[in-house]
Length: 258
Image 1 (cartoon, rainbow, N blue to C red):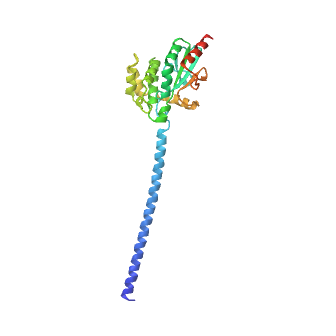
Image 2: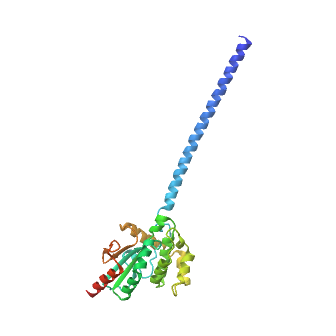
Image 3: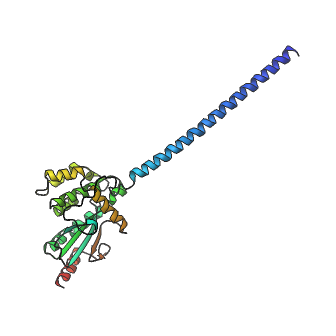
């Protein structure tokens, strides 16, 4: 065999060896990419699971640890209602509200004075139930934190006044200002005698957070369409397009006469 032929065969073998090495390298890269992709998928799934777990229940405060501590005087099923007015009043109004809810503020602005007049006259009793629907819809914790603060005000016998202050000073729905304890304590100064060390401690520790979570769960499980839900003597009057404060007053006063 000539030197030229031997050189040609050697060159061919070398090219083949180089090509095989390239194929092996390509295979190694392919396997590496498959493994990496699998790891990314697993990590991605874990991240999704983690996000879901982290967000689950955030609309109802269920991420709050601790025992369920009902505010003073709470009544009804599982002590989830805060009562206002005389217990023997002929008419009963059940109100499901969220302190971040603009529609709740509109209801309160329109009906506040009438409800105060009727409860003051002993003709109407009101049971307030606190929901956290806006926390779930918009994100944040202001609904829950404000509800806890209102429950703390109930402990101090100042629920009605503080309830009104929260609605009168309600921030825009997208502004989670009520998530800040300092803001809620600042508003307590508008209620005579509420800004006390006991109230501050109750707010800052989230004493009633688990109770709020339980109330929010009752709202979700109650089949209600939204907040506010306002029920007078078993009838949902918020869905009644003809209802007005004057009509509510007449119905309550008529029931008191009967």
